[in-house]
Length: 212
Image 1 (spheres, rainbow, N blue to C red):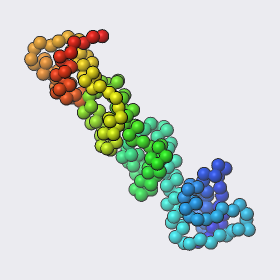
Image 2 (cartoon, one colour):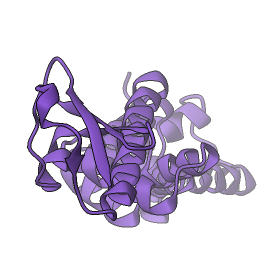
Image 3 (cartoon, helix red, strand yellow):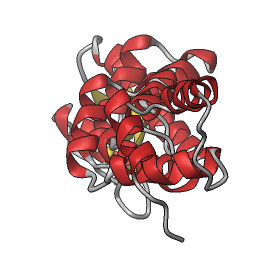
Image 4 (cartoon, rainbow, N blue to C red):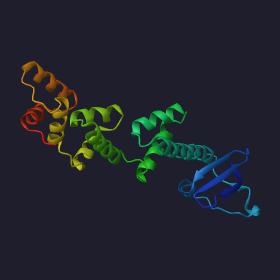
């Protein structure tokens, strides 16, 4: 394989390699260095010979860089997403499985993707804005594709009193009254469970006098 020219971006973060078929491969500076090639802007240093298998390596690295840029754009445009959802978007845009995994791993390494942090933000929002209990929040996060380990770690990092939240939800559902009818109490309790609260939390909430 012959390299006819190598161009370096203004910031030095990318290199564009032109091969003997006039195909251009734009790769990250990190991948370029791993190839062990020397950059030169002198015409006399070209064509430059390198192993034939480099053509495939250039193609893979170029696809990975395009995928990284796509994911960065997608996250900026649509907000934090789980790795699972990002993989799905990559497949929809015809990136290979290996390429998408490499791109996501790279963005995780640089904290562009941080599932634990994303889960922490969502947990706080669900608890504060919707008054969801822990089990409902877990369900919502699982449905969005977040890994179970990320969800569990995020809950460990969050300082949320779900018993206190249960009190707020209970009195919201009862409109600050205290239902005396057994069927009405059960109806409220069942709603609380659907909102993600345990029976212990429901029992506690029903026993606490609400103060605005």
